[in-house]
Amino acid sequence: MNRLYTLIVIVISIGFTSCQFSENIYINEDGTGRMEFSFDGTQLMQMAGDKMGETQEEAIDSTFSFKELFDLKRDSISKLPEEKQLKLKNLEPFNMHMVMNPKTSEMKFDMFTDFKEVSELQDMFKAMNSFSDLEQGKKGKQSNSPANPFSSPELGKSTTLEYDFDGKTFKRVAKIIDKEAYKKAADSLGEMAVMFGSSMYKLNYHFPKPIKSVSNEKAMFSADKKSFTVEFGFMEYLSNPEALNIDVVLED
Image 1: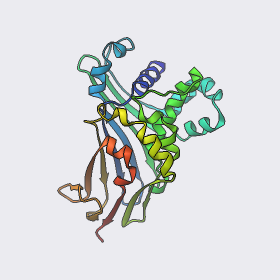
Image 2: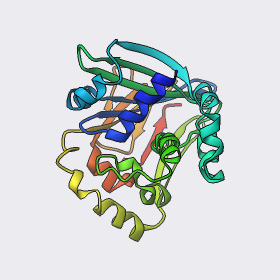
Image 3: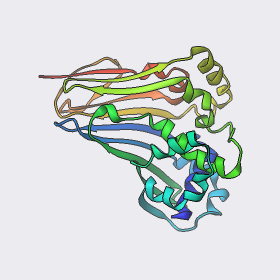
């Protein structure tokens, strides 16, 4: 487990360059479901090369809970400010499935949690950034890696992301609550545009009934119309998170 922790920290500290991100939501008839945040970092694995090889030689295919991980790091966590401890506490319901193979350069992460109702969901970008606080607290300093957009606290503090579902209508609503602060933080990420130029952010949403309409014209429906996918440039998403706001109406 300690080796898994080290590997995850390395991935986060390097950043998510050229990764493909997916935000997956599966909703059941009774309103319960699962949310999954996944990324394919195979290109990152290839770029990391020797640095990743120093940490592992054998392939890994493992699933673990953040609660288990935090239990092992309780001493480090106890030294963090209370605000950061609370952020990490919010991560405890999440699990992670990690596949890493140095021979094939495959690297895939799936971070997921079950929910009783859609309104329980939290912004998983912020959740991942909360995890990086463990290493920052251990070093006693903040990470300002230009390759890691999640290391910018201004982005997180200046936005909110909420989900709602009443059985017929689903809403994903991102809001920039401090436009000036967000623009300043987003502009500072401009140097990453080239690195993240090929990265995409996908919404993959699955519902218990056929979909009547989706507010985003880029939506691509499944054959049974119970799910859809929207794909957006990752840097475009960071520059304007409200662009992926979604209203979904299900058939009666």
